[in-house]
Image: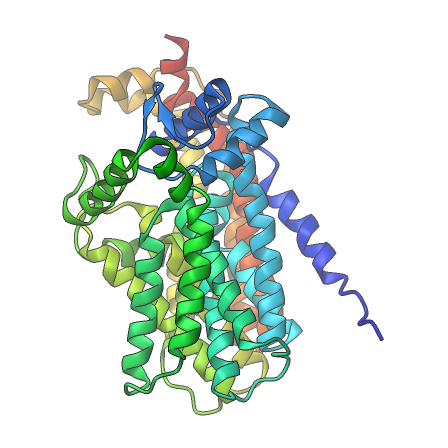
Length: 467
């Protein structure tokens, strides 16, 4: 007998499309990554060489080609423009939300799946990155899925207390290998480094108890190798080892040196996650600590997520180049832990923590204030020009950008969502609070994309474009 179709998948898909697809092409490509990646895809179309990446029609060895396959396909459909360059990540956003709901529902409960989906879609950077044209959204998703299926494999092998693992050990190990291979094709071998470090830390946590079979590890590695061989093998056979060697050297340079403008202080990524992954970053804090009322599968998956968080943040704190999206894989465990905090409140296993309310209120109202004040600062920006020393910045600030002041309502609305979220948390209504806080953040990002981001491009991009 077939199970009834879950209509929530439809709601999540519609919500994801509504959040991520509108306004994709409203702003020009922003930074080095977006511009260069879109150019790589454009040149791939022109050269019709889909096995090698080019920039300025010279070999570009910094990235594998998989993301550019997606971008060039979108450009064939929608034309060579900003919308097409960002469309693959909008699809990744919808896929990510559906996957998080499915995993949360399978491992815990339907309500938890909804909460995890809300937490990811309703936190600032996780939401915003699906409107970008960079590689990381797909890269992170593939790494996460590889680790997830390896966790299922280990549960199956060790007869862990968890139902619904109806497939065999080779099946879960193979799926883990497939997604690892795709991650490597998307951005490189750092995916495998993150995976191995996570397994190594879990091995230490498990007091050196072997939780996998050598046979299944070889099977996983074979599948990973075969997937990556579809490009690495073909490229090497066609053009020799030069391109691959340059790519590997570039990966090493990322870890050992910093690029210009990409150096930061040691705690850089923790600040980025705290502010950029708000409100999930604050709500996640209670779930980092030991729980007394956990079922074994819940505890084990929480431990895996905590390990993934620390592996990502520590590794990329060691890396010399510090860029926001380097730690973006940590958004999966952060949003999981945030959803877990709310889920435990709903189940009555935890009490609302006063320090969490203080932090959510402080950061939430601060962000709301900045959003409300910024349009009025922009209305009077020409009065600030004499106090700016940078000539280029002065020229950009001279741009005639039409602000009305009504854009500040976005910040006011966000403050209202924060208020009701905190009020419902305090009054013992965590489910309603989560919808208010995460849903309000998602709506705020959507409105800001339409009313603020499109205006900011008038300063950051339009003067240069008009030259």
